[in-house]
Image (cartoon, rainbow, N blue to C red; front, side):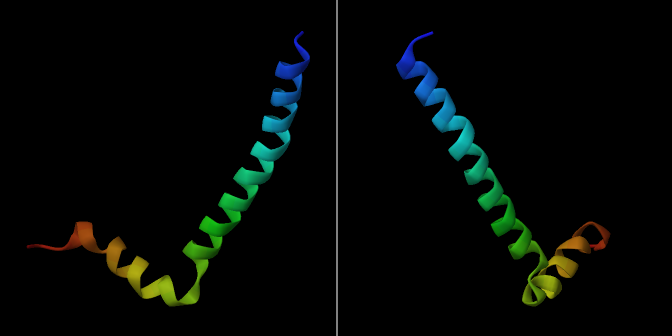
Amino acid sequence: MDPTYRAAAEFAQTWGLAYFVIVFLIVLAYALWPSRKQQFDEAARIPLRED
């Protein structure tokens, strides 16, 4: 196997995992932030509205 490919694959596996963990934690914090509760509750009721 080409050493350049191997280095690129190892870099992508290591830092790709770190990137996705960080993004997941940011999205989780956004979704569970207390000030967002009213916004999400309102969005959950959109399908039940009779406009």
